[in-house]
Length: 513
Image: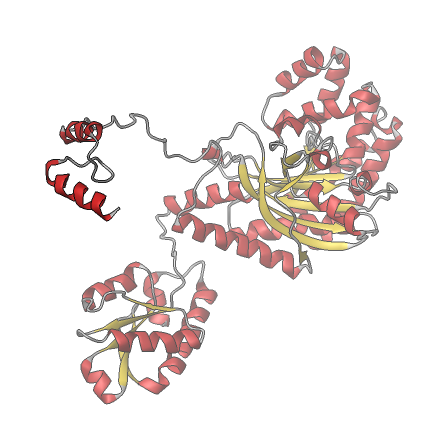
């Protein structure tokens, strides 16, 4: 064996090496010569993946995320103020859970590939999963809120705030309660939210499913066509009456005289005075359902007067809310500001039979709720901020720890540690020797209200300089008192901003601070 190795080593100087190891094989030697020739580079693929978000979706950068978090925070605050508890449900459900709950909108549900024998779909809204949750957990009363993404295979219009993936903020009251008391509060909640967001003037449209069904009955619509005609009426917020009428006649087989009769009603809107007027309508009051719906609407208007929001509410007979699960009052919030056409920004109503569809004994649990479509509100608020050229603050940092000289990085880190431990939001530069001017410019650009400045002299004396970034006033503070002084300054500034948040000018804020 050793002899053979020595023999091989004698020839190794005259043998070319293949790509893997030394070899006396003439074939490998020839291949080695071939490998010495320059190789042609393989052609790179000409096509690259197009970097874009899927149709109907968007990314949220720091500014957009800051706006979104502020909006969702304000909405959550209103929900909590009314005593709602928070729940969460899966992003996808069994397909059977969602099937048959949305009428003609069922075609917009995203179905997922079969996984382990389960047919699944992405949730279309938060209402049906909530009903499933109630039935599954045998809950008979709850006031809940949920903020989460839903998915619809729709034709999106990004500029109008319409997406395939978007947030909904739901507030629902489940349980046996007296008529129209929960409904009035749901509408009041919607009004509170719109006011808190300062998104512009708005109107809450209201109607009643029993009144609509009674209207169809009085006009001669066959019972089996109530839901499909209701879906046609639901398009009146986007299409003129003539288009909707043609759909009723040509696509859904309704007699022209019946469609014309419906048209005389669904173009009516007004206040509680319209409710009074319809009680005197001979054709409409022949239907018990219509009379029952009118009585409910009369009571509803009495309650919203107690809340003082009657001027924000419009009784609109064209409002239909095409989803099949609604059984009583329905409502929709629309923005009225000129130049904005984002459609409805909230909607909801009563859905007493939905839980019973999942309950093993068909037990019904009365439910009513409101859903805020915040994506459309984001669009309006972003446009408003852009028009007013308002800068959105993307960080919550309260204190920036700066150095006036070199080699003070550990001192900066130590100050940050103390501030963080005290619950103060702080940061410093990740460069060892940053320039002081650059650090102070960072504070101004990011609207950080306070800067702690450390220099060699300050370190020797055991003090720091606390700089008000807005006024540029600097005070010397003992190092051990820094956290307490910063906390006082942050509280004072927060109180000023809270008190004058909507109307304060920068120069006024400087004077206050």
